[in-house]
Amino acid sequence: MAGWITSLWWKLKGWKVTGTFRNDIPKMVLAVGPHTSAWDIVVGIAARYIIPIKHAYFLGKKELFDGAFGWFFRAIGGTPVDRSSSHGLVKQVADKFNEHAVFRIAMSPEGTRKKVDKLRTGFYYIAKEANVPIQLVGFDFTKREVIMGPLIYPSADEANDFKQILTFFAGVEGKHKEMGMQHMLH
Image (cartoon, rainbow, N blue to C red; front, top):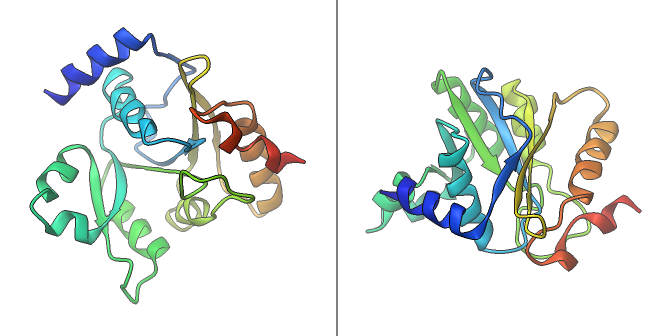
């Protein structure tokens, strides 16, 4: 049902996908940005059905999954993490990669919908710990495109890796352009 509804929304709004998603890579972090609006979630869920991307999840605090709507968050691709655990978030998510043959986790490099002056690093260290690539995915609201960018394999040159990530996202305009990542390249 969700697939049909989001596909209809996608067509009515005129969204498209540019680039190619690598279905042959079973495990990856999908770094999705810029994250400037709650509408990013709608675009992401729709894109997951349109492309399609199987076994793609997003993180949510475990309390969301304990309540009456836990079934809903799981149904749309949520996977719980315990932020109070003695095992750090990076380790918890890296362990999820080890528990599944196919596992893809979507994360926002900013970690919030607010304007930030530097990226959060969790998505990068999760990929590094799990030994998986990072698929850069841009949500460009001006062009109405989901842009499948390059794959980044975390390396020993972290500064260069982040420069590549920022260079990609600087060219993508989120719903609220002023909260994008363009200013971080200067």
